[in-house]
Length: 241
Image 1 (cartoon, rainbow, N blue to C red):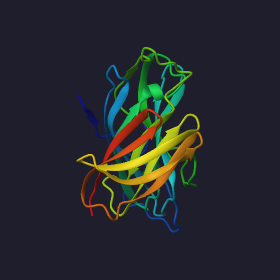
Image 2 (spheres, rainbow, N blue to C red):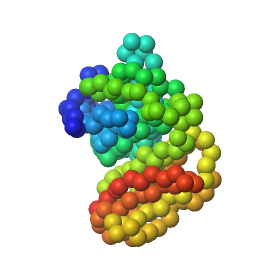
Image 3 (tube, rainbow, N blue to C red):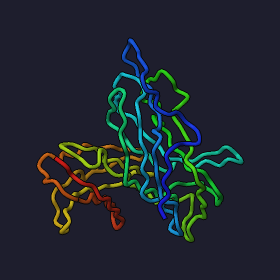
């Protein structure tokens, strides 16, 4: 069952009516979010989080990370990241339809965790307040590593999705690799017809973000397919011109 909440237990809310003289940025998690806790497959489904800029200056590219937090030890593990190409001042953007497989992250022991969101997790943007970027979501995440999954040998890629979604003329596709790999990114329509190829190249380990041109796509539902060898993963997105 999907769980929806309307505020964070920790973190900052948007402050209305703030007046500043200089263009500055202050990135924070928004107050609305939802997610479906993982079942036996260890996939957190349908994550939706708001990302807000409380100040009047536009922010350039930055990452938003989801993490598992152990309240007993204060240890945390980043389990997925999403690149936001830009965010205007005094504005919010919503990241939605985000699925994260916990088994893709190495070193997480079995236990009960809290799910958190961390805006500008890579410290790409200089902000007026650097201490309000993270917050814990309500509810617990119970995790047991899947049988046959070694946390020292995680699945080597994860397709986060695209942003914005719905897309207009352009959108950025984000994915991560735990080791270098040959990656093929393709777009398909609802009938299964291949529409375009976004990338077909060797990528190093780490986080990646690729620009996708959607200007020639008709409004509707599409799928991004990421494959490497015999492994593949698909994410749905929509276009709204």
